[in-house]
Image 1 (cartoon, one colour):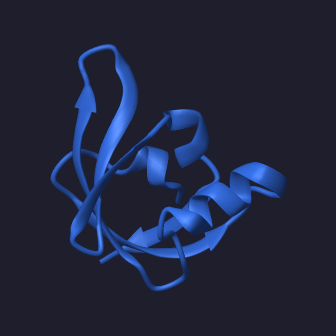
Image 2 (image 1 turned 90 degrees about the vertical axis):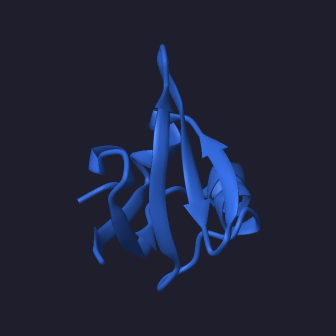
Length: 74
């Protein structure tokens, strides 16, 4: 499943990043790595972005970017 499919309030563990190039590097720079624990905090009122709690800090990414992050339920 992808991070885009996880609903608000749910937790998951990152498995892999399917993005390459600049987007893949940006996600890794933000702290997305295999084994990272992620909690979806909320979606913005107009859908984008999605706010995440990633290893104790908050980060917001677009749903388009969240489609590239493979996760499994925690």
